[in-house]
Image 1 (cartoon, rainbow, N blue to C red):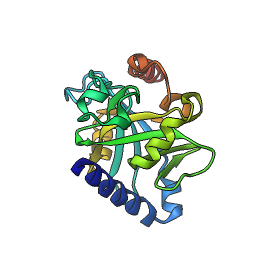
Image 2: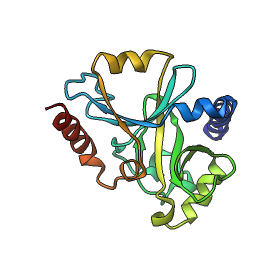
Image 3: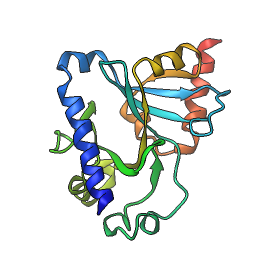
Length: 196
């Protein structure tokens, strides 16, 4: 129960943050994929691909797309009936790992969600998650993440300048890539080929 309340508080804070930004500022900050440098030493981000939503104050929020959590969701979420048959959950990042964030596609923006780009949205609202779980996966493309990544103003920009990350423009094909295990290899190879 506490985790549900905390999840809703976090979502509302994120929603307020995003909605408080001027629309023009949001459009000036495209959603990107970070591809970890092959030599990155951080065990959390090594060989990771991260969907990032830069904010107009220089901070950034994101989820690691290719880090599957190796457990059965129904057993590790305190018997949460909603998640019992929900499918795989990915490790989204080290910030608030008890909060479940989910990405999905929709024709229009559902209430209690944040628009990322194109027809891609994210949320942590349980009622919306229940609605998405009822939709066929080939329509919703639902993906769930425990936690998220976060960078203070200027922190991510510095990491990119120092070569820790390559930047790729996010698109629905990459974000919803089914072969998660090969996503980092695929993108890092493309980045290496560009630099040759």
